Length: 574
Image (cartoon, rainbow, N blue to C red; front, side):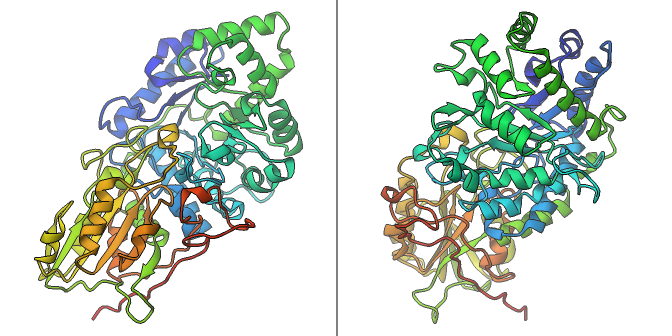
């Protein structure tokens, strides 16, 4: 029932404490830029410790692979969920799941903490980019990533029973149960105030779909529902998820999830353990103080504070998932899939996902004078903005490190600037100037300009924002460039941001979300090799005072409504 972080794990600890599971936290890796072989050796070392115990029950290793195998150097980084929701393409989600499974298995890991099926109802939430949409129907459709990760459940399979197809698939995890995307003001880990009907109709449907598709595990949310911490909510975890929905996999806590039942965290650990186990959590992402957890849980069982039947339920579920995964037959990872990491085929798939996730919000002052698609052949063009040549920024949080990174040294990929250079005609002169002043722009006789700006990378609470503004330098760049030359502005962000005062200055506007490593997908559509097809899966507000504002609300006055997106036709090559 204990899951520990790799940094405190060893084969001896696995053996001596009978540890059932190990994880990598965000950015937790065996070495910087580690190869698949290095990962496999680490995982197998822990596994050998587990196998040398009396019963030889194998451990499972879990990792956050939330937009591809995002902790690993050289892996394909797919667009974050906020962009994938725009595609409304469940088959694409399934293919991304299958590709991610292969890349995760390439490093010897059989279990991922994905997908996040949050329904983000307020973009001020720092995890909004991990949510496919404010509309539960899109979130439900995109749970098709689960059969991609795990394999298609057999035709005669019982509903609610987990399924993992084999050594090229991984166990998945629907998270964070339940209502994580509905907190007040979008404050991370906070309180979701909504009635039972609202919880069932907005935040729960993704779980129905996930369970029917055989998801192996469900992770509990840090947040509360009407003041009651989800990690201590017996009615929702045991009563509803396990008994009513007949979920047969195992329930896992979030990182130090039971510690955070109390305020401050860890203030009364014996209560936290009792409440978490009683609620119905089966596996505990401790992840560091495992002796304290094991001692406390053992004490409570021996003294009848926790019934043995509850332990049996947890162990039965964990073992069932381990059996279904085939980890008893094949506990040790081999090198057969190491060549699957960051393959060209997976990068092509990511590029397709980028193209389909772009939303064209403005194209010329009217339909008769569109700026896009841009001509590849022009005398001189300007590329500007903080995000034009920044791979880390276009990947966002949960990339190599938990909070993500700025710059181009984090992993292998193509920046938007590099992609533009590859796409334009060889005769076109391209000038890149990150923050040009207006004199520079007006004196250079540019044919047009591409301005790429956006949010810095962030994850979880660090991303919570009450103002949702772009950095001041970005706004200056938009003003300086668009005031002097025809411009298209591309926004790289995890959510809609404040843009209303600037739209008038722009000739064209593209929402590119957090596209990941394959920046070529952006250039492909800007220059008309492919058309724009994306439709907003989130409402784009005018001002933050309107928030929360979601499609279907009584007072709905957005800058760009849910479902909006202009289209262009691909340009036929001469």
